[in-house]
Image (cartoon, rainbow, N blue to C red; front, top):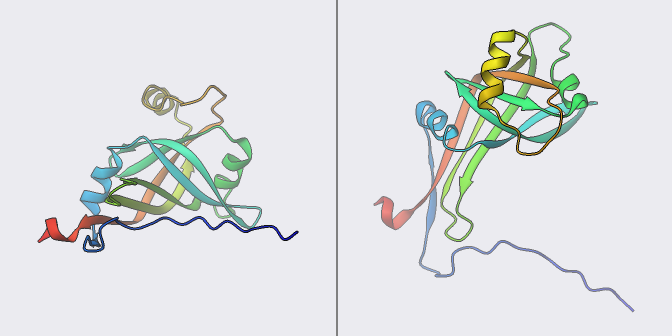
Length: 158
């Protein structure tokens, strides 16, 4: 007997006339939007392959600060050959699954481990883990590139 394949698809708006379009966000707006959510994704290279971990974050000026509970991921991110930090990307978004409206922001830059005891204490109070576990490290990502898009209703945008 042949097994049936199931295809999953995200449908667009129910009404054929409804239209969304993407608007680029400027750097300041993109960074401001990051402060409205607590969960994002950290993209990095682990054993020469792309890897991603969900992380909680805060902004410290323009820097994105995240905590990791995965020792292997922390080691992959903070062991650069030249001491400059590892290149990473951080992404967060807020998109309405029904209306398909919202935003997505990506920060790309160098991640460095936070070792200063005063900073660790300050960030410890701001970055409360969602799940129990041991925090293995805190990273500061200095953004070299900030890109963002907003999915807007074309009719409402005029």
